Length: 334
Image (cartoon, rainbow, N blue to C red):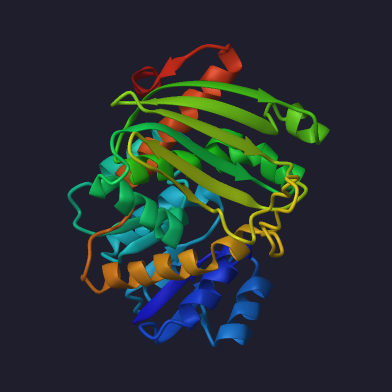
């Protein structure tokens, strides 16, 4: 099949590399406002370059991958749907939840599949964790812990446009908690602090946060995030039930150092970048999109899924700023 890629920054170029290696993808068509980025992708992956999204949509593509800046997501999703072309779009759907809801309303009933990029759903550890929950082998759940710690904060310009740590970083934890447990979040309480880069505090954001999520069956989920984790990129989940407990991410590249005597685990070189930690998950995610394009499966992560994670992020942001518990229904109705 022929896939178009809109946006060739860090993640767009990575997707181009991944797609070019898939047997099901015959050719790539790419576009980016920065001509040099498009030219580089053409040289590396043998892609065809066009000068606009409109030209890309008219280039006979079977599906499109939207990896452009967040502000461009709504218009590009809608353009793909109007052209009848299946869309893969990196999260978020839009910069604000109100815009995201408008996108959902605009695409409903169109019959064009849309997949939003939440790659943890395709990581083997998380897939196995979901299967364990669904099988009932853990018994009734009582506690979930989810962690995302970045090795260093992104640049100030990124922070200023990110919407905050809950919308940019924690949202991956929120999505994977919903997906693994099969439950919805009903209430949150969030806290945050700043002990690192001043530009994060100056942007009105926190560099380290914690959130308690109450799920609709009473399970408690604890989410921990930070922009500062000098040992590496740390993504983990624990799921505790009345019968058994399991963990995702307890492997030799885990960026933790044990101080127990005689313990050599973890013994590997720590993960230091999200593309390192989730290389295979990204490949599985884009393979799934080619299956969506071929009509062989429904979208594994819909706009509705992405918006649910977004509501949790909004609730945590409000909770942080107002120092109080916030229900999901409160932000949904705001």
